[in-house]
Length: 210
Image (tube, rainbow, N blue to C red; front, side, top):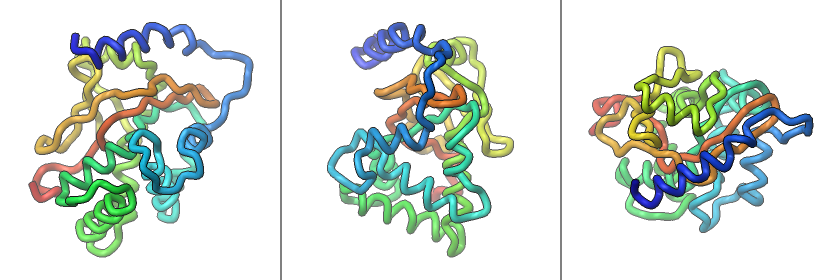
């Protein structure tokens, strides 16, 4: 295995026991992401979740309350860190590397693709990162080995684990995300968060203009 895969495999083994339910109350998924991101404002830390949190809040102004959906219930969130969002913006033509600029570039793309309204497409992208299944990192690996797909909250859309830690999405023209640190973050109601290093895209190459 490559060094990153070795580290991830070790993390999976060490955290598997912790996946069992405990009596102690756990914070919600948004609370965990906020705690890991400080004040949630754009900063120079590419490994927290400022951009994801802002996207969730923005999408919750639409027809689907994404923030509410992530606040309770049993599910798995594949959470792109800020580096993942910056990489997406660069894939879409953004030439900078700061979080505010990258977020603006993504919103601009979604606004154009959504014919003036970025919220429906943004909501689809976020729902594509949530599975109604409770999937530990070890179970994710088993799915990859058995070629089993993962259902998402985006109607009719699935993602495919492969090569142990990677996720195949609908955008063949973009590099696929993989699990990243931290993984197996356990929230209330048996929810779990896994960090990924790129954004999952439910759009085809043609829809992305690739």
